[in-house]
Image 1 (cartoon, helix red, strand yellow):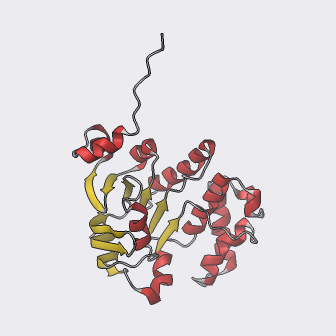
Image 2: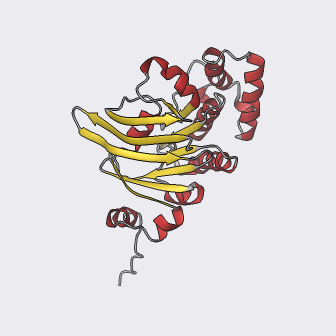
Image 3: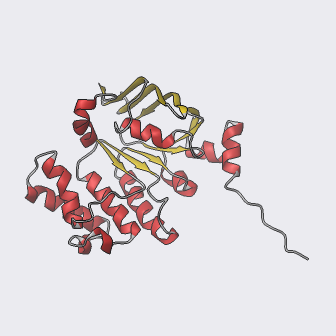
Length: 251
């Protein structure tokens, strides 16, 4: 049985109409799925539906055999199982790095401070930020803030991690430090769904590529198949937008 099962999910926004028009997707335990597609196609909306930040108008989302979609009163429990890291880091500015990380496990999961602090410090060491544990967000670079956000999500022991364009707001030199953390998580068997425009990263980290266009999954394949020989014209056109022919020298 798949860890995450998305069946015929539909999502409408009153102003924009149908954003997700019947999306079905299975994610196995330990699998890394990268979701690609043009802006506005429904990629981020799908992640927000999985995490319960958006309700759905049709279909079901199940985690480990249990339906988790549209269970408004229990979303705080579901979000402990489904971690999400956003483009904006959403760290509390008045709290230190360590305090930001400890808040969720101690408040929502009622875990002891000693246990959580020990785990948080070990994770901070792994991402190269142990020395920043007493710093405030304003004292960190964008890449450092994003790594803290990842540690904060991991400390909740999620079954699935969702990453929504986590490098989009970063300077180019900071992108790699965040992607390296995600690659290490993939190697360790963390189940992940990743929305990104970093195509080389997608190719390196994904077990499966899902290409969405206009609210529908148009293509679902291995990275090798998708990038080397996409099956649909729409996917070929999408990939060609990232290719440039060499400009001949002007005479």
